Structures are given as C-alpha cells and as structure tokens.
Length: 370
Image 1 (cartoon, rainbow, N blue to C red):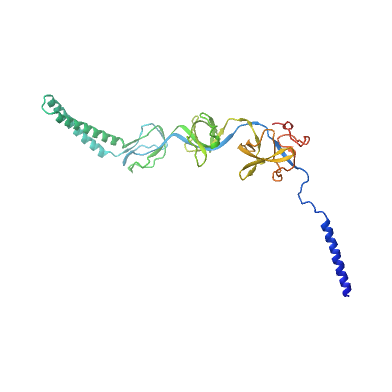
Image 2 (image 1 turned 30 degrees about the vertical axis):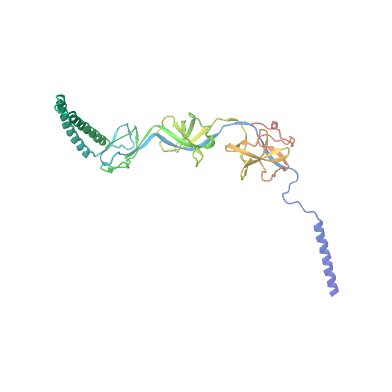
C-alpha cells in the first residue's frame, strides 16, 4: 500500500514538472495594446495665411467731466436749489450758506472806510499848504488801503458761502437737506458732464505697440444690443505692474440716452492683420513645465520642437518661433508618440487624404488650401 502511494506521488511530481517546463519554453505573448510598425497619426501642414487679431476686453463709461460738489466753508444751509437728475448750467447757484455775521463785518468795515477816506481827503488838503507832515498823511492813506483790503477778504468769505455748478452738466441725488450744517467734507451733490462720454479699458501688455491714437473701436453695454463706436484718444504713460496691462481711453462717437457714466462696456478691438501668420490647431500644443512643444513629422520620425506662441482664436493658435511654413504638425495620438518614434501620416486635416503620398515626406502641394 505504501509502495503504491509513493509511486502515485512520484508520477504526479514528474507530470507537473513537465507541464511547468512547457509553459516556460512557450514564448511570452506581446503586451496588450502593443503596436507593430509606425504609429498612425493625423497631421496639419503649416501654411502662411492672413490673420487678424480681435480681442474683447471689459471697459467702463466715464463722463467727460465729473466731480463731487463740496462747500468751501462750514455753515448752515439757508437755500438749496439742487434739482436732482436735472441739467444745470455753469455758475448756477446750488446752495447758499448763512452769512449774516460776515455781512455785519462787511458793513462795519464800509463805515470805517468812509470815515478814513474823509480823513485822508482833509489831510491831503493840509499837506498842500504844509499844515501837516508827509508822515501824518501817509498814515491816514495806509488806514484807507488797509480797510479796503479787509473788505476784500470779507467779500471773498461771503462769496464762498455760495455753492455754484463748476460746469454745465447733469446733477445726481443730493445728500443733504435745507437747514443742515455742512463743512467742506460734506458732498452736496455729484455733477457729470455727459454731453461727451469717454470709455476706459485695459489691454494686455503685448498689444502696446499695436494700439494707435485715433483707432476705431466698438463696444456694447448691458441691456442693449446696439453697437456703439469710439476713437482712441490717449493711453496711460506706463504699464500697470500688477496686471501687466495698459490703460486706454477713447472718446465715444455720438450721443445716446442709453449710455450712462459708470456703465460696464464690452470693448471689441481689431488690430492690423498679419499677412504671413503661422497657425496650427490648439490641440497640437503640448504644455511643458517651461514652455510649449509640438510634434513635427520629419521623414517618418516624430520630432519634438519647442515653440513660442502668440495670439489665438477659438480653434487655432499662432506660432511665433519653432515651426516653419511647410512643416507638418501632428495633431492626434500625441500621448502615444515618443521622441524619434516612427510615425505615419494617415490624414491631413486641413487638406485631402494623403494615403497616395510617399510617407518619407508630406509635401504642401498635397494639401488643398482653404
């Protein structure tokens, strides 16, 4: 019985060893997803073409002139003529402060001046007959001039109690009431000159050299489908360091009741077109830690090239450096392609199929230009 069991165990070990050896001798199967031959990708032949850069930036409408109206002196308001939301002319009286004490001082000085002038006249007659010395006459004349100067000071103080419109414009809402005591820190109202509006906006630093004085722009505002126009009138003297942008001001063309200072505007700018721009699909760009790359088809080999990019539209991006006219850029299978790997162009997406074109090089002549 023991002999029989030993024979069975021994036979099982021999059979298992033979099976394991056959498995080891069998060649390993290729890993799943392994490719044989060149990787097939789609390409895009770079062709120079005219491209106009259009950008949309936010802006704000501003009045040609706008200011807060403050009283120049402290006092109680005894007259208030602020017509809220109405147009007023330059110099219109908007408020009057109490000036009774100043008027009393003015009357006193006028009486003193009248007496001093009579004294000066008498002494002038005495001086002619040498009844008094020149010094005595000069003192009386000085008294007259001093009183006139004091009267001028009081009159200036009285004029400051009258608040007038600094220019013609539209008044806002008043923040004070009749009888209120105000100081120069208080705002009586806000006035805006809206006969001529301006629009302020910022553009990225890279467009600094393309913005020109007199350049036409268009803009729209919230709540209106109408498109308005403006002309660039000035730019800021420096670029803002925090945002790397340049502030631009334009004069709005024409008048429209829908345009209100402070309103948000969406500004559209068009710059001079580049007649030889090199554009490729945005999906062909490979972002890197430091810069960007594209994959070029060169004689059946994938060549990774560093590029500098410029402006872009909804589907394409401009290449400034790293790609030349006639180059074929890989646009599909980017994650599967490795540097110097063998690749095959199956289709040129900006032309016809090139299955009949030799794969050692894709010629621009094989592409239908749009």
